[in-house]
Amino acid sequence: MEAAAFLAYHPEIGRRGRVAKTRELVVAGTPYIIVYRVQATIEILTILHTARKWPDRLD
Image (cartoon, rainbow, N blue to C red):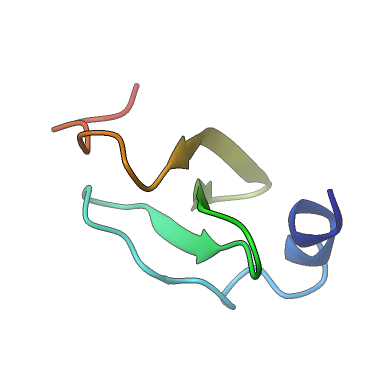
């Protein structure tokens, strides 16, 4: 998935996440959003379909 690989070079490209301390990257041309956290590394927490109910928290 090119969008996930792009995060390695541009971790702040996504918008501020709906869940605290996360960011979200909308995958162009798809109904998916990559939810991730930027710390010493980039941690992809989940990939959500936009039709799903948004979780209150991500562990």
